[in-house]
Length: 64
Image (cartoon, rainbow, N blue to C red; front, side, top):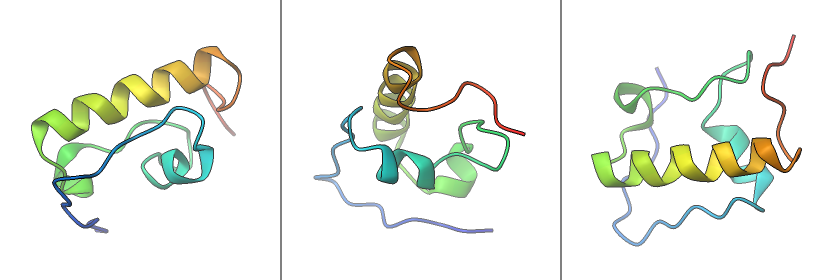
């Protein structure tokens, strides 16, 4: 189980694909809050950023 640092100033940008890929599993699904260790607000911001990146074809919807 990998946990990430819970930084209160953490900001997710949909164009920062490398950072967003850290929070997705090998199938392209968004990691749950129990694995990411983010707050609920940060998890929602992460989900929005990943979904925006998917719609702009920066991230795949499904991999493998």
